[in-house]
Length: 121
Image (cartoon, rainbow, N blue to C red; front, side):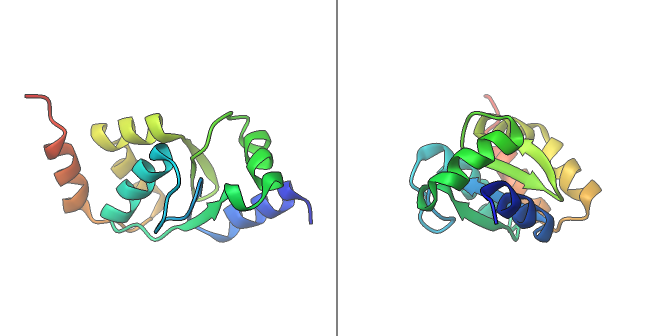
């Protein structure tokens, strides 16, 4: 199976997938850590794919999404974005809306706490 086939299969079989450097329990870059931290805090069940473990997957995910950076978040087969986009969507409430529209369970109170903690004073 090619890297692209493996990626397609992973994205199809999991409601939420984070292609990242490291794992959800041990991220190995700040950007991956931030996105994993948001997902973990919000109680979202997701598959984590460590791109550092497989160079073909690491390049393949960039080709698959036509997006040059890692991490990459997918929800119900749809590419959402990387760290900056996920951060913006979390703070604006758009991530909540996407998860609700796609039927993905998450802790709404936790997402409110993230926004509250990041309000500009």
